Length: 479
Ligand SMILES: Nc1ncnc2c1ncn2[C@@H]1O[C@H](COP(=O)(O)OP(=O)(O)OP(=O)(O)O)[C@@H](O)[C@H]1O
Ligand SMILES: [Mg+2]
Image (cartoon, rainbow, N blue to C red; front, side):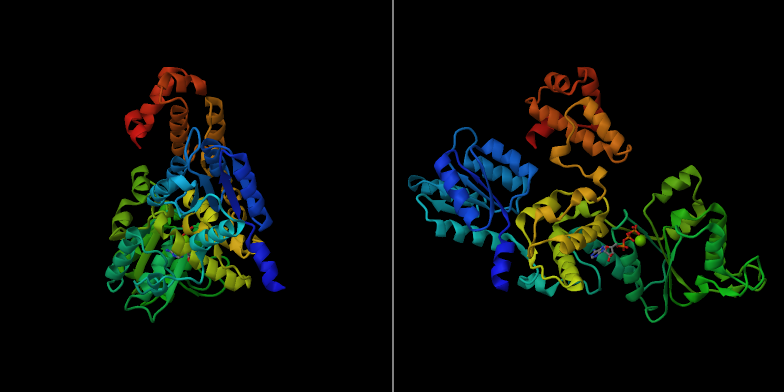
């Protein structure tokens, strides 16, 4: 019984069949639907590609010979847009050589006409099984996992390797480390890794979130106070500098501290002694300082909101964490890691992620980086109805919806562009402007006058926008 239900659940995968012959198209659709798949059809390559960009498909089955855009072109385009989605080619008996050609271009498999329903189902199953990211099917290399030897970190990209190397280099020293990176890139994880790989690992790691405490509270938290030193100081309190004695003090979100507190911090770091509020007796401190920020401190220094001397004092060894969108090669590792974590925690048997869903994640920008990916996967595990996560389970749009830029949301007119920019509240508008301009040019055969007209802009204005964005039509056409 259980197996039966699982079969059914698992089959709710999306397949698109592209063929100009209605009989084949419909025949395929019926065979796939009978097996429990959601099957869609398209009579030509162009509309198929439109559908593929609108909706996630887990398998594409396409005829080779079609009027207009042929199957090879469909295949090549999918390999660019969504390389993880398997494409199965349908070929006539006389076109076996073109099937070989298709395989060279990245087709997963081919089906020669005439075909039996069993053959189709067999090939589709193979394609899905092969391309689904399974939690439990580790290849030998993946089984070993990240080989840098510290906990919590996943990802083997060159960018992350650089981070791991840097962590291992600085960990054994007492140098102050400044960790920068967008929200959710792993700054706290990095701070902890520095501590656990340091000689201070047996001593406390104390994290202070400078952004969440009001100024006076932050000061007494950091430096401590003695009983009666101010209203409300009923007991003496040991400052976190002292709590972290001979350990590591992690000041998170340091851009949030006021200039007054910055001055006090500067003095403590310089003199390596600390006088608790209300006290007169300075006490020596021995801490390793690690600091994190997602704000450009240099710019704050220029503006006068961050002390220059403090900046130099903390910017000894910088570690810059790359945003997730710049290391998408790590996605499969991270996806598998979080799927495993949450299917275990939630107690729901999820076996993996379907090709269409992986394609959706690969196209996403992740403004919230790894933390956002983690949340997306946790929610998908909770909400999914099958035992494989599908594109529809991801609900990316509800996460920072306004910042999600995909091909379907590129504005077509100046009016729409203005609307979109308003929605973005002027944040990260450049990518959408670029997409807008390039999309308009593409749709108008790279003719600037016509692209301008189509968007409702004057040609000089359109041209000025091109210049502002640094877009070269020749370069774009090549790419
Ligand atoms: N490389 C990574 N591998 C695995 N998990 C990661 C990685 N980077 C971050 N995470 C996870 O993502 C979440 C966010 O990480 P962390 O709190 O370290 O980010 P942060 O940069 O401090 O974010 P914020 O700026 O919002 O405070 C944590 O659950 C962390 O375990
Ligand atoms: Mg943090």
